[in-house]
Length: 209
Image 1 (tube, helix red, strand yellow):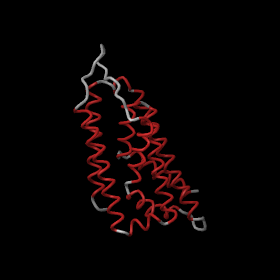
Image 2 (cartoon, rainbow, N blue to C red):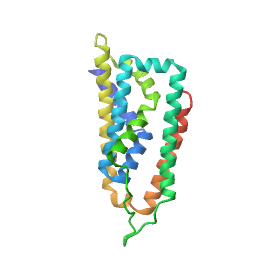
Image 3 (tube, rainbow, N blue to C red):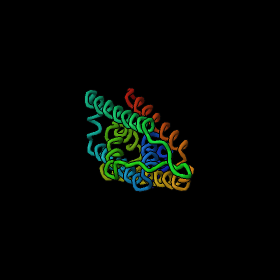
Image 4 (cartoon, rainbow, N blue to C red):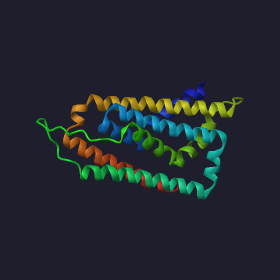
């Protein structure tokens, strides 16, 4: 039980550390509200669980030890994040001018919950560093005598649960400040920052561990 709490604390620290998943969830929240943010978060969770299952059955070890497979996944994931970031920046550059008496940003058509889920899922599935992280870290928190497969999935579930709570908090904060967040200047610069952050993270993902 001590190992489980220790891992939960580690998962919390990692969750609150800014990363591409946070940028995706916040961007979805600004574009489509809590519904799109939740769909993105569920996609991220599904991707993490897939890597957790892969680590549990040893597939992640195969990926990490195969330079070709690992490299292809890493580059694909990096390219995907860069494309996402570029799409956000292009959308802002070609966006309509704010309208309305209060200067609010008009709602744009989003890709829907399915597209948001797919974006979150692809962001994690195409990042082999998640699998390598699980392989390197999870064994340290598995008590002696516990079944490796079952406990690995338990730890992954804890990681996902902590992340989902954090995403819910982020979404709640964004909604609490929804009036301020929808000011034209705030939307413009927040989306620019998120787009640039995704491009930066994508570039870093392309670099070797």
